[in-house]
Image (cartoon, rainbow, N blue to C red; front, side, top):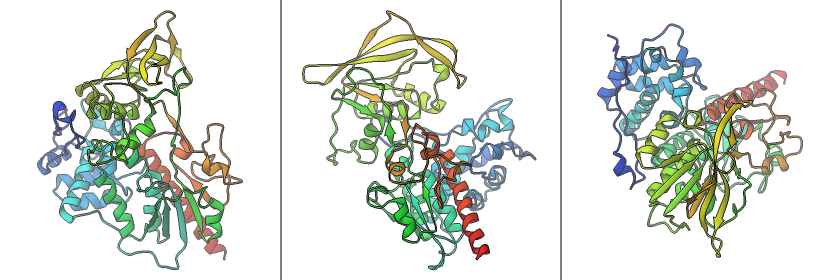
Amino acid sequence: MANMSPNKTPMAEASAEERRHTFNEVALGYTEAEAMTEATRCLNCRNKPCVSGCPVNVNIPKFIAEIAAGNHRAAYDIIRETNSLPGICGRVCPQENQCEGKCVRGIKGEPVAIGRLERFAADWYTSENGGASCPAKKPSPDAPRIAVVGSGPAGLTCAGDLLSYGYNVDIFEAFHTPGGVLVYGIPEFRLPKSVVMREIEALCLGGARIFTDMVIGRIKTVDELLAEGYAAVFIGTGAGLPSFLGIPGENSNGVYSANEFLTRINLMRAYRPDMDTPFRPAKRTVVVGGGNVAMDAARCAVRLGSEDVYIVYRRSEKELPARAEEVKHAKEEGVEFKFLTNPVEIKADENGNVTSVVCRRMELGEPDASGRRSPIEIPGSEFEIEADAVVIAIGTTPNPLIKETTPGLASDNRGRIITSDGVTTTHSAVFAGGDAVTGAATVILAMGAGKEAAAKIRDMIESKRTAD
């Protein structure tokens, strides 16, 4: 019988006070009883609007029905048919703008908690089986070999689908640890690294080989990979080049890009006393930006001991691009928001260390090209915020190394690889997807591009086989 409660089944969370002092996961997940109760809220709509909101087309009503019936393994297997990273997506996808945003139950209440149920299925499988699943058989040694550059969400998804098609896959990762933005960008309290590693392990069990410390474009070029016999190359290198404000004082000591700040903390584990990662604690931290990355940086600063943490955002709260859940958690943890505020200068002492951020009040004018109202400075409204650390979280662009070392690979004026259909580049047998093509976006959109690229690579290889 359908559960017609207008509200989602609540999910337990660590208390705000506890969270301020630990990097342990905040959201604790559903129990089996909670998951089955929430699953009965699904109406199993005939036209499945939620599926149209999922970039990887998970059969959402079908897997939820299996959870409701207590068939959790079947639910997990259904998700894995199209999504090779369910434990990750259940935690970090912006479901409110995607699958849950299309849910019919959201018209007169809250949508079904699709993300929480996906997480439950993935975590249940792990607890029952001690790890993630892998394809039934590894590809044949003489099957075509594909090179995947980058082991973030786009690369991992592309690799998973290519394995399922029966191809051999080699993944090249520039860092010493695979996972891309999943490990260097997203904090432990939102996405435990153990969850990422179990998904990567599943690919390796399925036959993928991962080569770390491999900076493609420096150690090997894309053309050299093709010359070595790879049938195709997928570029999923993300968008790791930080953007800055271009204001006076931005080169002062204590000013970080969000990428550097989060990489030191997440990948190099600066939050752990037993690690010798260079990191200077700050009493007052100002984070500039309003997206999920800004929320992550601010919440990390709280946990690292900053007494005062501010998020400075030039629009109003209504325009914040960050997930509502992340904003809520940040507020609960003591982060103070300065809306309609724009930094214009960073001040430093005689030793070059940050002392404050000079800001100017803003007001909203007419909508810009994106539909958001443009912020306009209010003359004479300057004020200062004392700070000894500033984190710039206003976006990133693709690293130029690949495009600069790959003749014939077209890119736009922002460094994004140009494609004809989202994944097919101007270079023969080279495909690309995720943030390297779109600029900084979401994990699930990058995964969708990885799936699409894998399908295009399969089509290319099979058409050549047919021609031969």
